Length: 222
Image (cartoon, rainbow, N blue to C red):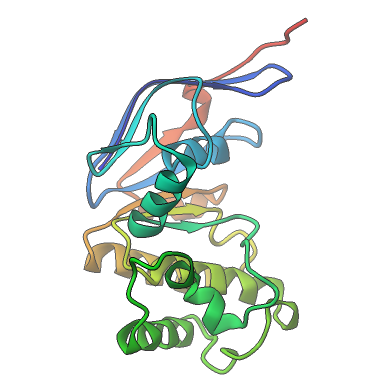
């Protein structure tokens, strides 16, 4: 589902990420681990086209990201990828239901019909937000905003789900419940799951664990 080869990326200041090869199969549940600054978020931004590499090739479901315009990459993400951002990226002027349905509002190729609206309400209920659909993000707790972001990532039934610390701000019981929902969606739609996590207690729920320390180089440049 996701193929990476000869990938190189660098930030000013000396951080360099080099991934010679990484293949993630359809339906696979993969966890990305490593200390802060090892490149976990950078890698998932690269594999979904949010960042562009200096060199190398990345493809999702047979679609190569290299050489595409920003608009093409955005449409590809909306149609194929459900991204749970670490900072949630909710829109303050939209309510919970509208934030969940945001991919449909951004891409007219997606059909915002009664079935999609019903699915949004169902997802919200599953994560404990069924009574908060009309509220704005500013009226929600930190954990509730995170759950809205998770619902938004799942609403299009994407073939790839990328989660950047999806349970990082949740208590243990809620975290397990949220991960159950994500895992259930992955199994239901034979989707690929890539999760960035610091929580070692979750790792036995994944098919494979990749440690970013195997791919990261830090150099001090003059």
